[in-house]
Image (tube, rainbow, N blue to C red; front, side, top):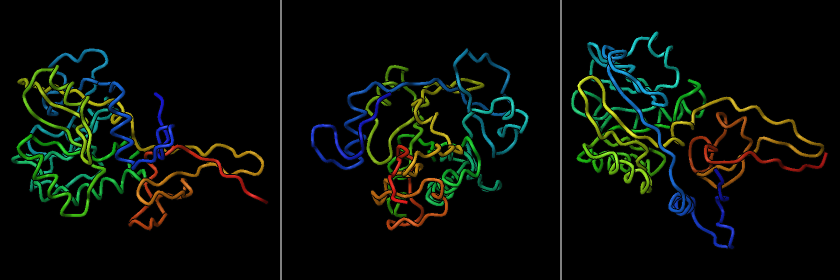
Amino acid sequence: MEYDTPWGLGNGEIISHNQWVSKTLARRTVDLTTVYDCMGSSLGKFPVPHGVLLAGYTTGQGGVPWTPAQFASHPSAIRIDQSPQNTPADELCDVLDVEQQAATIADTPGWVRAALRNWVTIARPGQRLPAVYCSHSTLTPVANALNAAGITSGVDIWLAEPMTAAMARTELQKAGGPFPVIGVQYLFMGDHDVSIFNTAWLNNVSRKTPVPHPGVGTQSGWAYCSKCTGLFFGPQEAQSHCPAGGHHDGSHSHSYNLPFIA
């Protein structure tokens, strides 16, 4: 897939990063992946078609959590932190489950910050950028809690709402804004539920990226920070200090080579 630069659209128009994302997504079709989520006690009790990804819980009560062996058998599965009151939070997960008898809206800002820090530092290779699972009725309260905590973007939404598959696809195709919908759980079965996900979110996992060998008079591995709009040395992102607060964020950046004079 081609990407425009974050500084313009190739016609001299200078826009913000959020405007660039909205314009880019508006003229492209989003690649989608079907996901089945289930409790650990239900895994293996229903057929999983080829190409369908699974999602499971690392926390919860009774038969909800998956076992380590189940996750080992499905290493690409989405990891969900249900985190009810008697279970410690798991900020190494991809998704926080915000609903009754699970995580609360008040839990969301702290979990998001910790999960993003873990993603940046590659605490668990394969972790995805933090997302929040919620229904339409709790979407606005979740957004309000994030904004009140100073988190105004960078958090994705897994929306749970009964609808047709066509409606779910439309919801994802039109997604945008500071808290975009990257998954829609639209069909609720007895032993599993069915969702459609933005494949780009699924594939954007934390990983150790090898720094290309630089040519003569260049240094590779530099990245663009979407927070302060400056360049920083990518391999030291976890130790960096961004003027906008926290670490630099190079998750949306290409890798740049900078010339230098020896």
